[in-house]
Length: 434
Image (cartoon, rainbow, N blue to C red; front, side, top):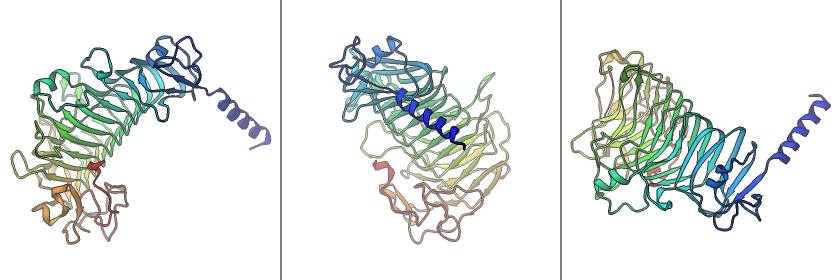
């Protein structure tokens, strides 16, 4: 690089740091006639966007504690503008809608219709199709904090959808969704859903309906059976010209998720949760790896109508010995009779396998006989393999994920272990406790 080029790069870096601005919003002490400085903040985030105040890439909008309203985020930025809680502050909104927007990052908000003057059943974060490059991080969403007195009718009438994302390159990371009807629904392409906690939900934890998406290391637990929906931890279906089941959902990764139908025996309205249920393909080029699924249904991992999909190194166990169940791993033909071809089912540990050989390669899988023969403490959801477990070094090293459920190296011995967790994987607290 020439001296002139280095000077130009330095000039751009300096100018970028000068241009980036910080703004402050304070529902208690702010005024919309103020300039938005730390000493003279604006009032609410909803009012900021209603005024169409322009922002530039690199800007940060800091939110102080208080109610910021029903917020509609809009504006096409060249790079990310960040909206975030000021350290030590607790900003709240009743809803976030994002439309005609690009390059927005939202961090650290508490979102619930309980903050509004009148409670309204709604989608708490609604990201429109006219959006791209949106990030929602470290937010907490809930229909209501306390649902202990809710009846099934209350669940149907009051629980809100969590996040609906119809845009492109949407990233949802480390959010906590509590007491919701359907946690996260993805319709757009190239989206990433990672590290989220979805607990106490009716309906489905995640609906994976868009192409080229990744669902990684999410925790989905405690399904509430309050209506006629057949509830899934993760569900997908295709849509096409003739409706459901006439299209293709392609290039999807489901990696390292933890799905538990119920963490408490005495909880009300316990549902018989299905694990990963994909019943109306075609599903093409899906990768389902390293998932731990603890459910009380037949469908542990089920793909109906799959082409070139891989189900590798998953652990699927029964939460009890009652029907429905035990949960299986299955690739089947499409409901309309179309064949499933070119698939791989390998290195999985489950209570049952019922796929037919014509769906593709099926090898190095192991059926669980008694849970206590395989796992350290099955009753407390600790599915680390016991030292004498037959699944150790019993898998194939071909076409397997590089890491295990805890993101430690997959092959610790001569060969990969069967299941989601390698025997010598670093001891870690079970992730459902976080």
